[in-house]
Structures are given as structure tokens and as C-alpha cells.
Length: 139
Figure 1 (cartoon, one colour):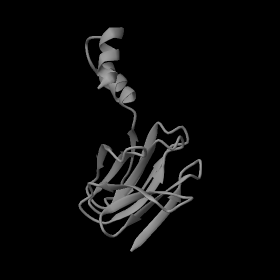
Figure 2: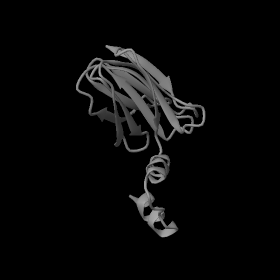
Figure 3: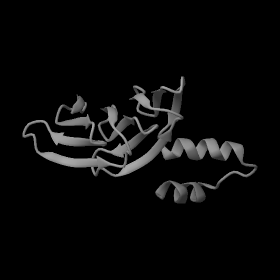
């Protein structure tokens, strides 16, 4: 069963999610499969592209939402909840993801490594030099 399909912002690709624990990326014009997003341990219920079309977020009954590269299909991050994640959506600027779960929570996640680095640095007693920061962002 395919439960959801969504266009990329430019209309060139489609993401679908299904009961087989995967999401799939397709060329809209030809129907050619571009990538299978594997990593969820249960049904994938929702997916959508980021506003810039570079990433995809999926929500699953395995208690996670996952962030993927829309170009390579590589898994970028796992966002964990205590129960099924029913919905995940990017903010209009693509900097955050909000998730909604059967665990009675909605959570807001920073989804750019630079944001996480800045948050972590704000909690440290030292400040990274520009060179150290550049090295961290290259990873």
C-alpha cells in the first residue's frame, strides 16, 4: 500500500511512502525510480520535501522521523519519539522540522548541522576559532 505521495518544490520529483517500511523517490515526468529510502523498521506514514528540494523527511510507526538527502537517498538524521510518528514537516525556511507523535508530543528539531554546532558551542565554556568551526562543518 502506498499511503502518501508528494511533489518536490520544483515538480520534477515525487516521494512516496508505503507499508513496506520504505519511502521512494521518483522522476515525475517518467515514473523512473531514483532511490529507495531504507532505514525505518516499520511502516512509513508520511513524507515531504524540504522547501529547497534537497532533503526529504519521513515519519514512521517505528517511533522515528528520518531526514534524507533527496539527491543521494542517504540517511542524514534520525529523530526519535516514544511512539509512532504520524507527521513530520519542514519549516518554511527549511531550518527546522516539526514532528507529531502518538506519544502526545510535538517536537521541534534543528536540522542543519551548523545550527546544532552553534547550540552546542553556546553551552561550552570555550569558543571555537573560525578554523575549528570550518573543520567541524566539513564533516
